[in-house]
Length: 345
Ligand code: AMP
Ligand code: MG
Image 1 (cartoon, helix red, strand yellow):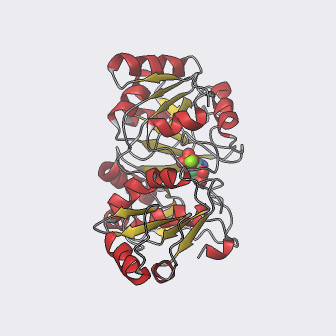
Image 2 (cartoon, rainbow, N blue to C red):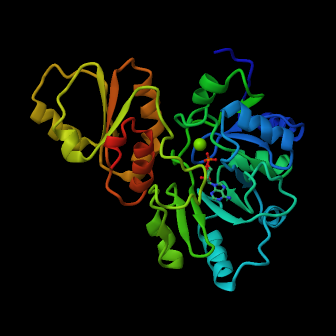
């Protein structure tokens, strides 16, 4: 892969340079607390069109608009028509979780180009906590449309190197801000008509419910109308075939040298290892969190999938996490990354 991309550091001068590129209609990749984003000025239709082209992303899949101040929320959304109870929920959630990995789907402002929202009357808005991203957004036009900086449907990047490997000859610059802390995408939440998670992510359902009470979850079933157009059944996938197992299935797998194994916890790996009782076991076995912590597991997910994907394996076996905390988001990504519909439970 050629590297025509300008590789920038997180120095103030370099962030200002990336902001200039955005203001001139270019594409700047940058770190957030979730994954690396591919940024374009949200008000520049040509730049937006290039994002879709570079990623190979279908035009029906709306982008998330990143902001770095509450004033920009007013410039990108039209909140006047919101019912008082929805407004109240929005205010409570903003004060609890912004800046942070929570994206709201809200009525869009007329000035926001339809390309950013895939023609929908709503827009997805996020206020990231990453200081590099916030500085970049503030120095540009204040609203940056940014999907993950990867090819459509593939593994998300959590390191600058991941971005360079796949988009290095297609975008203008990338700011290296080190590894992403959270490691799975933001939670996408709609508030109208009722609070509902469209995509599980960096803020868990339990956290949301502690602030506003019951929150529904999109089931992703085929019978359900498409409320979040980008949530396709197949997504976030490595090149290597991936299988998603419940812990009992994972434990009963035989060890094969050319296959990869991604366990949730050190305990689960040890149980499997003792049962397999095969002292030939050498590599390709990774553990998302030795102590079985779902937050730590989420932060390692894409890094480890990238590693296994590069190891020349015939397939990768992954294990379902408990459906609590960020476990729900990790399971969602693994289900969509899984090769076989059969394995998608
Ligand atoms: P990404 O930018 O790839 O992390 O994903 C953004 C996702 O947010 C899209 O794929 C949709 O699933 C969801 N989304 C964005 N805008 C809207 C919207 N207006 N209504 C519903 N879902 C949205
Ligand atoms: Mg993405």
